[in-house]
Image (cartoon, rainbow, N blue to C red; front, side, top):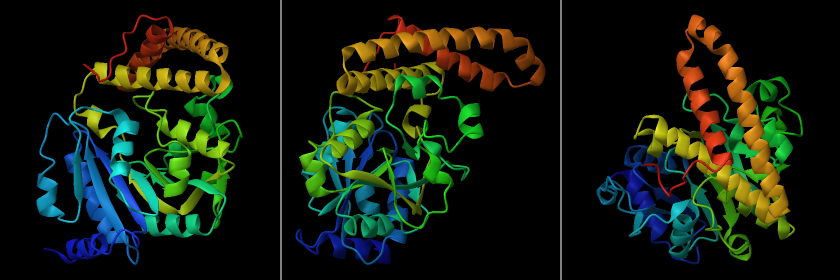
Amino acid sequence: MTRLEQSGNRQQESGQESMDVSIICVNWNSLGVLRECISSIYETTKGIAFEIIVVDNASPEGGVDTLQAEFPAVRIIKSCKNLGFGGANNLGFEHSSGAHVLFLNPDTKLVNPAINLMLQQLQGMPDAGVVGCKLLNSDLSLQTSCIQQFPTIVNQLLDIDFLRRRWPKSRLWGIAPLFMDAREPVRVEVISGACMMLRREAFERAGKFSTEYFMYAEDLDLCYKVTQLGLYNYYVGEGTVIHHGQKSSSKQGGAKPIQWAIVMRSNSVMQFCTKTRGPAYGAIYRTAMAVTASCRLLILALMLPLARLGGNKDSFRVTSIKWWAVLEWAIGRYELTALPE
């Protein structure tokens, strides 16, 4: 048994009352990156009592029991069916005992003591709801989706990479804190579900994760419910975590998983808009996305000759798949299933 595993055992055996943080990771065909995630937790997190709970969300590939041999302190909870992101995290929470809870994607890797930094800030801010940190892509570039504004028709229609790069500090995106040299936590609207920490009591008061979404809007919903309690969500820029992103679905390859992920996200955002702003707003959002997708596809068709000459066919293909999927969903021609087929 390694020193890190021995430390984890001592922390888990330290007792329910002294448990500082329960770290919950939901696994679905992500064992490879999950191992790296767990190792990085033990390597970077010192001086606090924590437990790691892995919820296996009925992974087809299996093998989750092998984690026990490598990390004896890790608790494994098996679900007999795929509960979705929110449902599986709620299941993990029911088996946790920490005064604080960290929901951490399996495809993440801690670069520095991000858990300690988030916990320290959370403990010092009575008005804090959800706390998150800086997320990096696999190539160590900044992942701008780690914070955002609550979705509206306007900011979703104008969610274009060129505009975000040209005006990154616009209030439209809500990502200005990512480009600030702030030493203190900054209030934001939404924290990414890839890495979000809350007090146990706040998570319970907010009603936990909503299970009406299968994926992609549970973090929006939780952040919104927390603000309805009179609390604020904070970005802690000193903490850094690599978030590889979509490792589970990418294993399947092809266009169908890409289409499914895009449509699932669009549908979840529409559900959130309907829930928080009313059915009429949700319907307008869907119509607006249909118009936007049509315009984007028309522009792409006009740009096709340039794409062929420029040798950028792969990027062009992915973008075309995205907007065709959005159009089919918006006009009701895409049959949305629980998992990509």
